[in-house]
Length: 438
Length: 74
Image (spheres, rainbow over the protein chains, first blue to last red):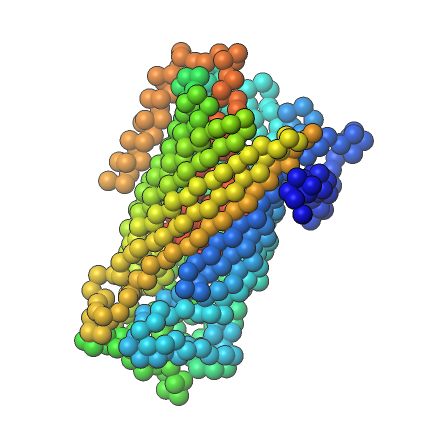
């Protein structure tokens, strides 16, 4: 079917999609609004594919956003995201010069990993549905209040959250100060139960190392200033603080216990037939702070967007993120937009590629690469084109790569010849459509 | 050192506000700034997708704002 013929049909989807999102949220529209003739919704929809090489994680994601002016300057925003995740995820275990066998999180199956190969758990499979609703209203002439709720559900994880945000304009609307607060409660119900920290992985059918459900609370605070510098330039600076309390451990991640001289795995619990792997342990609180700066500048219809974020937390992670986009407009209604993102983080204090047999356990330890020291690079391009109906379609392709280092002192014996921090390479492809109002 | 960095940043915010206290672009000169691509978040769907990807793969998150729902991926 030609895209041109498909567009009117796609436009028809807009209102039902918004209504369906509304119904999913259990959100009844106010009576006075029902009585009015319904104004069209602004609807954006996209299909995103995130695919890592070597059979690792693949996410197919459908995203939709619907926005409607309920009354003058009062808006309702609804978002829906459905993610379908498949593939294999690193378990945290180090590679070894021999075949390694692991018990699945459920405890009722096992899988093996070839000698020298990265330890990937191929039982990774999940579907995530996330919804949000935000209501925005002006307060007096210069302030804008928005309140919202967020929900997401996975097989083993549920999130509920509320948020509020207030912004006030100053200086003839050239300066905007904003404050935001978000509170969330997440519950975690891992497959097979949540492991006791540092408990050893056990053999088939033995779940005595697992406990029940867990939860965590997250509070986010944000203060920001947006400043118009001149007719072509706007800047923003935000400070944010995030406090997490509760179960912050990844229930599926383990660490290998190896001989401190040979680097080889050591035997696990008697009768299990496994090497010694311990479930990870993280602190039960985390405080993150970040500073984020953004500059947007118009150059005769082309737009430069540059941003920088510095983040630091009390787990010892410091990170720097720099992003650049340049939207180059050409023709009547087309644009081409290159994008580059540089990311760099230090390791958490308790990041350990392996634990050594015979040495006392640290208070906390994780071998999760995401808490290790690494550099990330994203390069991509996006092409967009307005349609005759007042809409716009766009497509982007990006390549994301991570290269990192194992923790200091972990390259002992046979481990010296193995890849202790395999590179991550992922392709991101997204097709988006903004439905026109005409 | 970290605290110092944060304080410096906040001081920069204050300076920015003060310096621009009497400057400004008049409402009738907002044609460029009013264009969709000049908004702070010009493509919310793409921004949400990116936040979700990087939150899942890196130890950092936030900065721009919040919302969109939690995730068991990190």
